[in-house]
Length: 286
Figure 1 (cartoon, helix red, strand yellow):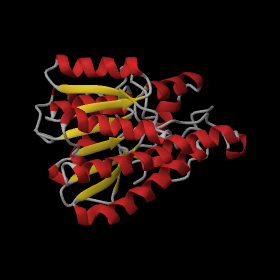
Figure 2 (figure 1 turned 90 degrees about the vertical axis):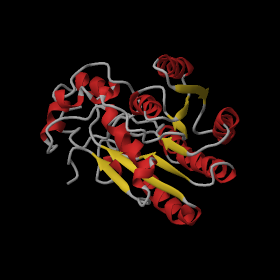
Figure 3 (figure 1 turned 180 degrees about the horizontal axis):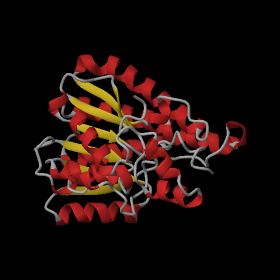
């Protein structure tokens, strides 16, 4: 696929960044002094084995949270959890299939059993599609996208809200959307549609559960340096450069930059923010 065809790229948020092409302004993110944004909180994170989810797990732990990492691939989860513990944080992991209701409920229940409550949740797990026009996507692939990207956050929020109600009483949830949910995305049409639906779920949940003291927001990442994006660039050289040319800040995000936005929305620093979809895109949709 050409760089032009990929000019409205989503975040590709579930894979690790294996090539260091980050702007030097982001390289010190992991060495920033913690602010204690999540001190004393218990955090549940889906899609936590790689990419933005793994960055969030590391950051949330540094910011004082006890974290439970959830995803389908155990060896990735285990590696990130061990890294967090080695750095002095509190972390564990649980295998979870976001498309399966029983698996999601069991994962959230495990968080409560492990740490005694649930305060905040970051629903980051998702899947993508092969780039191409809408009519070239198979029905099976379409169904899988919706099972993971829309049903998954719906199942997760239902379980998380029940856990927050039963334990912490008040809390916050952040869902990972995408700039693909804010504008046309011809090469990833079904993916973009799932993310737009997540925006609607987010707004509805915020309106429904706000009176109980449960805030619900979403972040919409732009071009983010993950393995999947680098693979796309290898297949279609120039994709990242083209995307950067469409971004006012002139570069892609490091996964940690996206995680920083999620951490703020989950923290008490954003106590009057709910129902928003926050673009974290370098200005791409400005």
